[in-house]
Length: 388
Ligand code: ADP
Image 1 (tube, rainbow, N blue to C red):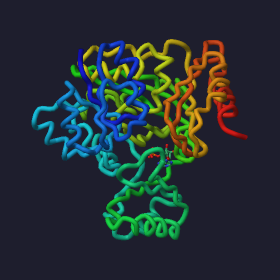
Image 2 (image 1 turned 120 degrees about the vertical axis):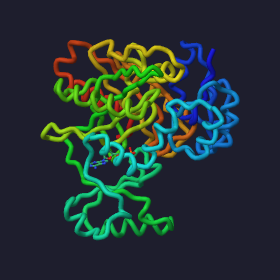
Image 3 (image 1 turned 180 degrees about the vertical axis):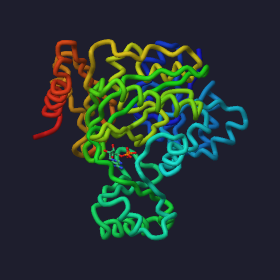
Image 4 (image 1 turned 90 degrees about the vertical axis):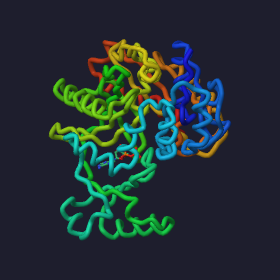
């Protein structure tokens, strides 16, 4: 029996529960609130914020290995623990170049992977001419702690950019070193791939999926994405290069843009299980959560292949401030054939908060007009979930 410490107790940790039980692994979670989803499935919880490295020292005393469901950690604090022999998987060196979006982009570019044009605001001497080169719209991003589009701003003109920068920096005297500016990519679709690497260096990849964002938040995922075999191979190669270069152990999610000309660019790396891989719980032989535990526990990796023809996953996002458990809507959605509803048990709903998700398995017959069929199912789910 292995004990795995998980830094972060949200839905990503909660969804490891079944796999942990199957593999005979006990989960100990570090998370601030007793209401966090994974507290109910953890053998034990260390109640502390994820960036509290002192709490992680206590977590480490209870566990064989420590892994992450949230990367907003205090790497400096954790590296002292690593020096004392605490086993982090993935290792801290694999997280270090990724936690700041500017450093992440530089790391990917240095590896020769395709990324959008970007620069750090603090490096720019003549902002106006630099922006003329990129052309509006531009995308302004907080270098750290962005998620679900928090900290990502699509900016249409120079006045708005200056306004935004002064808004964001007045509350925060640290100034422009906090931001990254990049070209707006007029993508045709957004894609993602989940990949896992084992202790021995074996890599497996899940099917490339299409992700659909609204207001920068993921709403739907369609597996597999309807792209060419060459594009699949290119994206798999990106995953291999990245995971090998970082010597990752565990699951990584890679988000990509697909241009109208077929060009693939890497948008963002998540050094953990990812929303774009939730379909794997119901649609694949080995879910991303089981795969992650297998990898970090030093077990052989499982089969990531789709078991059927495909799947569509729809996030159930909060749309109001409420304490409702939305029983009725969930029940109606569960009645859709081949639907699997996952409800994270959060006690509070807020607009945009991820409360649960639904995966509907698609059969072969449906896959003939796959994209349209998947989008229809997503619309049906959303018409039940969101108030008119
Ligand atoms: P987060 O870390 O908050 O998820 P992302 O960088 O993934 O931030 O951005 C969220 C979404 O914003 C993306 O999925 C995409 O829809 C949009 N976006 C981000 N960067 C760009 C870009 N350079 N060009 C066009 N859209 C972008």
